[in-house]
Length: 206
Image (cartoon, rainbow, N blue to C red; front, side, top):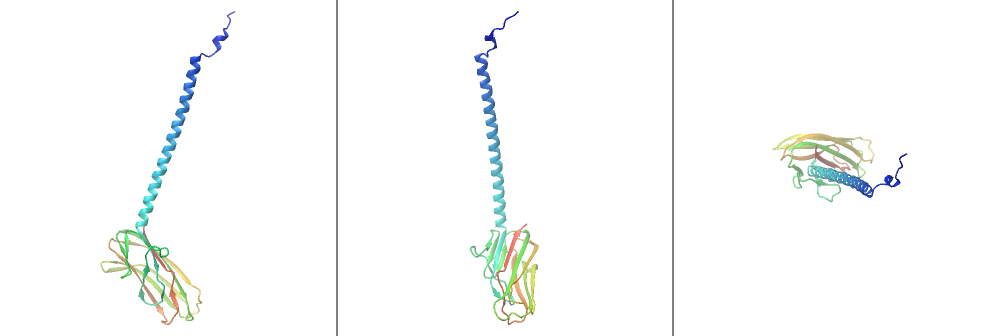
């Protein structure tokens, strides 16, 4: 019978060293792959954040939000507050507001979304004056104007001092150089304590 040498069953030192090298190589490869995946994820996240930042920047440049000045109901061109720090008022780089003419001038063109939050309230004893208050937003191009948005509130005869609100929206095509402004009209008794209050107007590119 052939005898088995116990020493032949033991791994040679050279084989053990080779196994250690292979295990070490596998571990290093795994670490390198994991690191590459992490770096790839970070790069993708960075690109997405930069894309969102540019998108937000472009949105901020192509929009404006104006605050209407408080005024008793009458027929008058609307005056707006546009300075930063005045509530939520702001004007993007693609717009400018003319405080003398009360017009929003467009430096961009495209399809724009307009919104108007209209609020009226009575601040005195003369609150029984029925009538209709309307804000009409015009889009003017070289003197030719068109109605971009119209919002109206009917004040009933038996109305209380509770404020009345209404929201109106529209889509309008605006060209570079167009002027956007609004008129307030009131068809009712002239002697009234109803006034326009906390009215907002906004526009942004869609």
